[in-house]
Length: 301
Length: 43
Image (cartoon, one colour):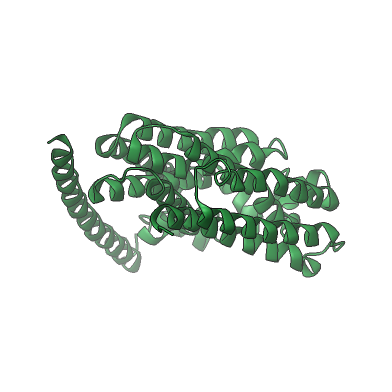
């Protein structure tokens, strides 16, 4: 018996269950969900607000666990993901499935109990969309996988807002649109310098199916609708000058970095400095943009 | 199952049981706080 197989007979270590929830991705989900709530015109009591954000985190973790359950074979083929609990043999698939389904149900039921039906339904929709539309349906079939699948990651600020107010309004829809339009350039920048991993696993990411330069053009093109959606709350009167100035500056930097990516001609990861920098900045961009929205809501100039 | 493996299984079960106990305790406190907050909202 191989060591990897031997360990699957053990009860799963709680650290591996935690790893199934993709804690690093969860931090961005929690932050945008919290910002969506803090940007709303009315705040819920602390215990209810805390529970809503906790449910968003648990729902995201559950979706991540179900994603890893379904993609264990793909993860085993990619260097970036081969050490995850399932492909490395530290956990059996059934445990991951039970954990993911249990956590999904728990997060939605708790959201319903603590907040309102619309927030619980939005959370359920985001989990189901990520698992069935992105993971099961799109990811292995089309290079548009993250374009459409990105909607799953765009739900948190909307859920945070709805948990606080019980209504869907224009600003949370714009926040949804910002993350939806931010996701493709963010993941395409990553997929450019881990292209060989995706190719080896047979995942049809854009650099694998359409080539490196086509991906760079798409990244540059996406900065335009992203900038429009990100700056729009200011001229529309949904946010003030603090957010307006921050969003203009952040989008100018994003567009500048995307142009450097467009001008790059490197085909090997070693020469993809602009792509790596854009990927790193895109995370900072989203944190800063949402932080500016909350600051704008709470800072009176 | 050999002795060291048996011990490892028990150690993991103990660790998970202890963690589950803490989580259940936290859940009870959270439900209490949610109930109090909801009562405040309904007044």
